[in-house]
Image 1 (cartoon, helix red, strand yellow):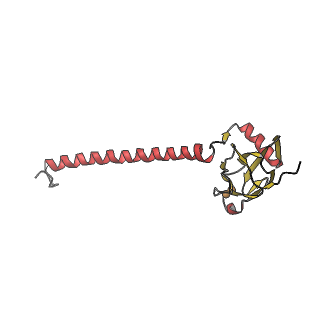
Image 2 (image 1 turned 90 degrees about the vertical axis):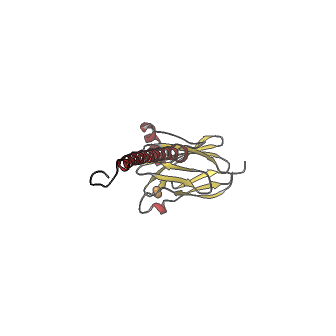
Image 3 (image 1 turned 180 degrees about the vertical axis):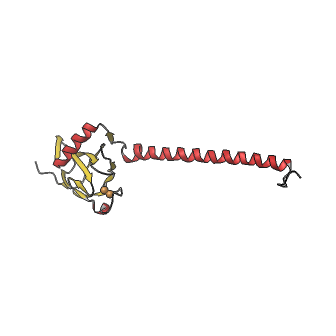
Length: 177
Ligand code: CUA
């Protein structure tokens, strides 16, 4: 026995060693959690939210302003024989333009941004799904192969009326030529 603790020198050495290992273990866990958090954020931003195979985004603020200005006009712009561009802006709590008409079979490029908080631009029944980020314009291309009404929803919680942030893509039959 040694001292008042009732521990032998062996006990003391054992406890010191155990504490060192526990500290090392805790540090390992913290490092792993930090790496996991950073990797998840990276994945969400780069592979899931903003960029997938046909998507890109740029953060040139001037360009973003131009896109936002274009979005305010709510126009669907014909960019080629069979292609269209739509500039769409999310703002609590609606999409502008709220109703988009495109012809069946046309390739549509959506330029999506937000003028306030994060919104989630999703066209139901399609793989179109990207985050609308203030100051950043995300793009996604999609070809609508059937006529009908596709609902645009917001899938990023953005406040009181988040659930009512709904728009429409109406795919019209091609006019007979
Ligand atoms: Cu916009 Cu939720």
